[in-house]
Length: 300
Figure 1: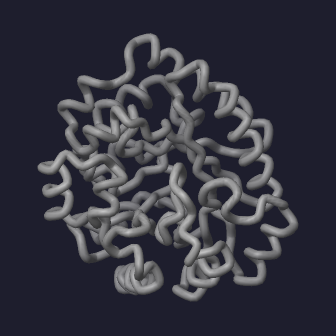
Figure 2 (figure 1 turned 30 degrees about the horizontal axis):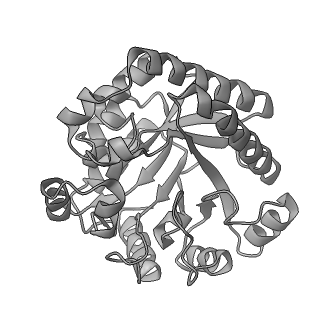
């Protein structure tokens, strides 16, 4: 199956732990994702799109969209947060399974401590999970996998800026705990650059795990300014650290060429994280169209 291209509500400022922007209700976001030429969408935060399977199927079908995946985050290293996090996994897994998606994307939750040092890899590595927290995180992930497998869902881990799995070193440790057939990877090119990694090198290193690609571009100058100003993750997003595809520093051509040669056949999900009041938050439609045109020029 050829690579398919999707977008996600986060490109319209619809993100976990923030208020949904009222000017971009679910119907408008889906209309614009389809109108910009994308074949699919992610679920977005639970409750943004319909949570009734029949209603969600109808909303997608009327726009000829496929639900490619859903993102779930909770504090993986905290045992006290596990029960609530697993309830979130259960309801999300049940919904996407009934709508035909086979992939749940799991992440640690953004924390204030880690978000405050976002993009500072050296400091982030010093403030990684303790040994006990690594054990708790491993157990949490094992339980997520154990709940998803009987439903026919694969689990891909998303390294994320402002969490305890942000840097290449943290990614390496996490994936050393699980075989590739148990835990896949959702590589996010923008978060990879932000966290101090190289997306192409990471793709080569973890190609046997790659189940989904979140394709972001990064304004290098804005990223440098965000680091210098010690902006937290949400502050950097409002500062415009992420760019429409082709306007930033990510080597899109090299990455997509490698994926084609490698035989990757999963979803490529275009994302440009924005937040209300920040740069580019007023023009998600134009950004989505520009990104889709860039991918078409690259053969997708």
